[in-house]
Structures are given as C-alpha cells and as structure tokens.
Length: 537
Image (cartoon, rainbow, N blue to C red):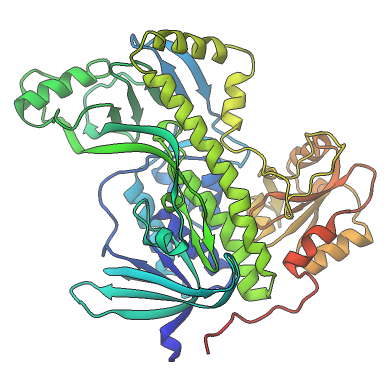
C-alpha cells in the first residue's frame, strides 16, 4: 500500500464543522483529508447566528478577526405574543464570558469562505471537492475498540470508479443524511418536535421595524421568527404549508401580509424591486439525537449526531463544540499515544449537552406554537409568568452552555460547594503579554495550562510538566484581577485547564495540590514519550 493511499484522519463534509475540525487537528500536527461532494461553498445563507463560545473556537483556528469584520452583534432573543407585545426577553451581552459578544449574526457562506481560506494555508490539510463518499468500513473488537485502519471508499465527480483511502480515524461531518451514521450503526432518538417552516432571506433598502436581536412570535396560528442578519439583510421564518408559495402575484400578496408587522411593501410587486428575496426554502424542523456517536475510530459530529429546531440559534454552535471537544483528544491519541479510552469521553461529555440544548429549543418552539387547542393560551400565559420571575431568563441563557457532567476529565469533589469551576469554561479576559494586550487563549496556546493565584507547589509543577502545560500566575496578567476574582468565587487556588479551556481539575483554597490526578493521568499517558501516528501496514 502506497503512502498516498493513507492519511491519519479523513473528514467527510467540508461545511463549517468539518473544516473547523481539520484546522483544529492541524494546529496539533495531525494531517487530514477533507472530502466534500460539492466543488465550492454552498452560496445561499443557512445558519445565521453563533454565540461567544463559538467565537472563541473561531479564535482558536485563527479567523476571529476576519469574522468580526463580517459579524453583527445582536441584543438577544425576545418572545412576543400575536400582537407583538413582549412576553419575555433573553438579553445577550456585547462582552460575554468567552471575551466576545454573546450573540453574533452572520452569513454562513462568508464564514465558510474564511474557514476554507484558512484551510488552504495549512499544509497539514487537503480539501478534495467533487468527491462522494460511498462507504466507511472498519474492523473492530467490541463497540469502541479499534483494531485496524478504517477504509473510506469514494468516487470522484463524473466517474463510476471506486477509490479507497485508509485512515486511522474518520470524522463524519456529513449532515442529517450522514453515510457515516450508517457506518457507526446509529439510529435517531426522536425528541418529539417536527414542523414545516418557510425560511425567507431578504436584502432590502426599505425601512424595517426591527429590534437588534431575534424575535419569536408566539402564536398558534402564525408563529414566526424575525432577525436582522446584516446591514441590509433580514431573515423571516414562518410556519407555512408547502402549498403556499411566495412567488408570483398571489405569492407577493401573501409575502406582503406576512412581513407587514415589520416592513411596508407595495401592493404592486413591480414596485418592490428594492425588496429582494435572496432565498426561500421549506424546512422540516426536527429534534433528534443519534443513539451512539462512535464506533471504533469513526465519529459523528454536527447534524450527523444531532438535529435541533433553530429557535435558540444553537444548531451550528453545537457542531463546532463537537469539533473542539473531540479534536484535542483524538490528536493526543494519535500523536502522543494516549489511551483509547480518552475517546470515550467525547460522546459522554457532548451528548448530554446536546440533549439539553435541543430540549431548550423545543421548549421555545412549543412556547411559540403552543398548539391550537384551548390550552394554548394558558401555556403561553404560564411561559410569560415564569419568564418574569427573577433570574429565570438569565438561567435559561446559561443553560445553553451548562457545566460538563463529572467524569474522568472533569473532577468534581463530593461535599464541596457546587460553584467550584470544574467542568466550566475559564473566562477569557484581555491580558498583557510582552507589553501587548492579547486575549488569554492566545497566551495559553493549544495545550493544557495551569492558572494559579498562589506560588506553584512542587506537585503543580510536576503536573504541568507531565502535560506540557504552561503555569501562569494570574496576578501577573494585567487583567484587572478578573481571573483572580473568578478563582476566588470558585474557592480555588489554582485550576488545570484542558486544551478546550474547560476546567479539568482544581486546587481548592488552602489545600495546596491537585488531588485527582490518578483519575485522568492513565487516559492522558502523562508520563509516556509521545508516540508516532499509527501507520497502516
């Protein structure tokens, strides 16, 4: 077998999730081939919103400054009744925990071009467009124990000839119709939401009555979503049957009535040339979760693993979180000989989070639509009353990024207060480095890190050395005390950060040392010499 017929990682799908995964692997020295059946970026808008955690992921692949130039911060989410009165407001900050606006609007094709430009500059990555993957096969011993390489079979555009590529791992970023999901043997778990909606993307110079955020209209007969995406770009989503087109004279009148609460359109469509419908598409919004996300060295990410209604803007966000959670673990297994069990933590950590986000989206969806029975008005009234309770809207917003549950890579100590930071993300303030203001992650790099408010003990230093982690005193960072205050709130003298900036372990105030190293050291092989990537014989 020639060297050209193998690669460490094959990624199926060159959407934002697949390309981000390739870039994250490249930063850790792992080569990949990205296979995509389309030759170019899909030109029409799809996802339009990301949160500050995803902005931090874009920072980690080096495109955040370019993304900032095309993104538009938004104020949050409002639930409105049928008369457009505010039921509840979920405010989003212009400076979130991760150092970016908590909500940003954008155009997906523009983001994809940024990511592909970055990919083209990485010698570790190869993008193959016009390639259709037809099968993924592997030999395994048990459900998650890979014993051999994975074979990816594909065809190039215009050819019936099947070709093969051998790889150590496959990341299935190939969407809801994933062929990789079949290879994993996964089936969908139905989370009980399915509705047909029309998505309408518009460019207009007309005056549009807008709140600078997303609006969800809670109405059983005509639920809707509206948001401003860009300077002259807007999106509406309406629950409409397939047989109500928005084309032609009848369609124009229907569109005119739909958008009337926000924009005034002329009755004559020939006078509406300053209101351009870029795209209208019928979608079935679903809530589903794959029952398994891995078999051997084949993994599911993004829409291949989970489908969520778009009502809280977390579809793409969830996929990019998958990529960040998995790639550092896979790189450590491939490049440094870490235990295969490290890969088990991907589904264990991400699946409960994805399920929770889907449930929040479904809850908002039912608040919007509520059914058409006599209980609908009661349910909407209850939603309004609950959301007016102190702290409820803030809690719902936080629930979109809850702490990871306890496990080998999240050490929570029984009997200690729940506000200890294990399983949560480290905040990202601006810090001083060599006389320059930089974001914290740019200082920390791509590996583990120890942040401490006290002089490092011998054990802290040993842990950092074994992991290749930087040890940083927070009082030397010039961050106006932000990280010291965060540690104090969590009653911690120091924290051990994973490469994805999740707190893995803590030194409780006054105790002096990390105490749970035995739980995670075997998975990470902290005392082993880095191993070469496995080669196919």
